[in-house]
Length: 192
Ligand SMILES: Cc1cc2nc3c(=O)[nH]c(=O)nc-3n(C[C@H](O)[C@H](O)[C@H](O)COP(=O)(O)O)c2cc1C
Image (cartoon, rainbow, N blue to C red; front, side, top):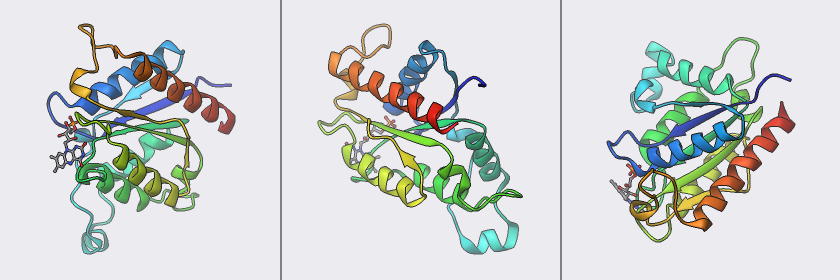
């Protein structure tokens, strides 16, 4: 069996992003578990806001195709999303929308979502830790027929969640992160 490859996608480009920081902590856990982990920035896949006229005129942008193929090259995906007004930010939704428009040869549309598990996490300075964004993201991915694992992490008070070495410091957060990482690995191995 080939090495398990997991893709980690932070849903924020902001300097000092809490979600990028959580994505880094998750990537560290995957690496500790022996997984071949790739952490990308959506900044490397710049996409216009989805517009059907644009797609009709120019086709799907190459960055959407590249992002879809990046997802396709991994056995499981973790998306770490901010919460904007109780939902996912446009950066995350727009990336998913474009990826759903990519159809490579010999593939059914949306196959890239169906053939591997997804995990979701969020970080916010608020008490709910992005719980509502997770509900929205779970719905979106489920509508794409993705398997979204049950274990998730909503990191509350994200500005106070780390120690000096950038590791999560609260036992409940550490346990939730480890449980999510473990379950994504288990389900991804099962679906390989
Ligand atoms: C437009 C907008 C809406 C927001 N709405 C929420 C919200 O509904 N719930 C929440 O917990 N935080 C909300 N926030 C705060 C974000 O969670 C916070 O800015 C967070 O740091 C963004 O993630 P990042 O640090 O990864 O960039 C909002 C921020 C913005 C800019």
